[in-house]
Length: 409
Picture 1 (cartoon, rainbow, N blue to C red):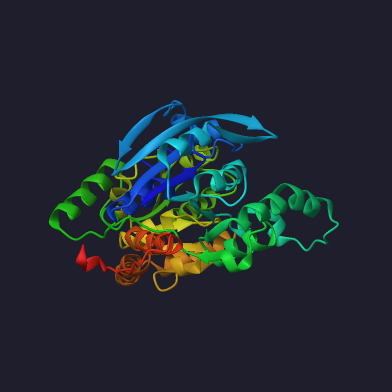
Picture 2 (cartoon, rainbow, N blue to C red; picture 1 turned 90 degrees about the vertical axis):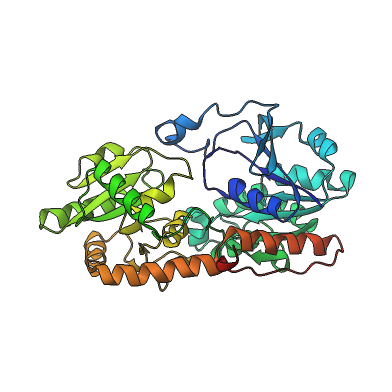
């Protein structure tokens, strides 16, 4: 079986779906190709240069490269109707001749073009939706069909999404609220939506389990300026207003000024960086490649994301540390049994929750539960097995999905 994954951007050293899923699809024996534009991730963001500017210029159009068992193809782009469209996708699909095309989105030029070319090449088309309700404002509003914003969404998203959905086998929504957004606003037929969570690479994201791991933890903490008794609270990702890691820094500052041994470690970049760095007990560190990120989690004691969901919640859990998130997230399965929820944007409640994790025994108990859950329910290997089963069934092949436990690795 030959598969193409279409994605807007690809950046080496990241832990995104377009990096991780192809790695594990290739291990199933699937010939896997990733086709992306010559753009960095999140190129459309306000304040992009402050956060991801260092990733610009990683790839040039026409590049073909072998990575982790799959082939990466970089195409050019052109802005049409305000959105980026791949240049040369039809020619690329003709050269690869895929059996399956998996688009990472269910709306936009990429899945629309994939739907248009489907008849010519005869592949089966799958899509996905990663839009949580928290990042799609219309999902939280009560509007009539005649509301201007709703009408604009219907024309630009729902209608083309419906056309794509008609020729789609399945749309993988990463959470229940993503499924709702896909159905209500993006035109995906409800019966074609399958909830399939994102995964974690349990080969590299694992708890401290050896003397070597313990020594590495100690050395990194010393290099970052943290003592053995410090309770290090880590955030990873962009330092932006919507993610608001500054709230965590302010909570850590309040605890530090009270004489509590809490410290903050913020791995990433963005407009809140200077404000975070000025907070008592807090340090910032630039983004690191995904293979280095587990070291930072294993050097920490707690991981927290004050506002929006993050895939790194699973990474932290897999490394055996408890997770704190806000009460409004829809992906509570990433925290239940292995962390705590606090009231969104309530700094004092965040302080209270951090104090509940002061005891090492409590942190270890929750951390162990998180590592076990991540290995059991959220490994990229299991996600890849599920998808390959769906792909082969769509082609009429007999395929048995094998559920592999971490102990079998």
